[in-house]
Amino acid sequence: DAGITQSPRYKITETGRQVTLMCHQTWSHSYMFWYRQDLGHGLRLIYYSAAADITDKGEVPDGYVVSRSKTENFPLTLESATRSQTSVYFCASSEAGPSYEQYFGPGTRLTVT
Amino acid sequence: QKEVEQNSGPLSVPEGAIASLNCTYSDRGSQSFFWYRQYSGKSPELIMFIYSNGDKEDGRFTAQLNKASQYVSLLIRDSQPSDSATYLCADPGNTPLVFGKGTRLSVIA
Image (cartoon, rainbow over all chains, first blue to last red; front, side, top):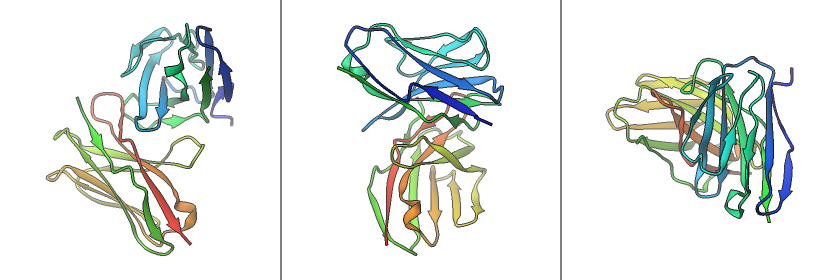
């Protein structure tokens, strides 16, 4: 039972490049989330999704794009990466809703040079 | 906008002592809270859920919710070096979870 996985685990990219972070869950949870975690800011919600083709903005959505064509996948794309997007990105899922317990993936450490 | 405040720490306690982690919140309507533990370099994992006033115990962990004073706490009895981590509280309510920034706990052997 893999649960929730993220790939890549580490990524270095250059300013201006497009990069996609992948998230895959095997629990068939309806809700999926993307967070970034930075020192001094804690976990901040970027986007979340209630089901396939339904997404909503979180606290810090600017510069990010999400899609959800299949329930199990929720990729996050940085269309033109900036140094301020250097962070650790966590994907999470929830069976019941956005205010219920969430289960996190292992994270992707992204560095934008 | 809901806010959840935590002292960033580090909170240092000797092995075997009680560690007390606190979280204050702004939304008077908040009914329940989650506590997550995050080891360095790892993802947050859910360790406790408390709903309604009072205490909830799970092994060495006790969560306490005080709605009148708008704080929630996590007590860890007989602290072990393996408890060294960052602890985040999260407020559900009617919106996506709002996380505190976390308190770093260091248990000294």
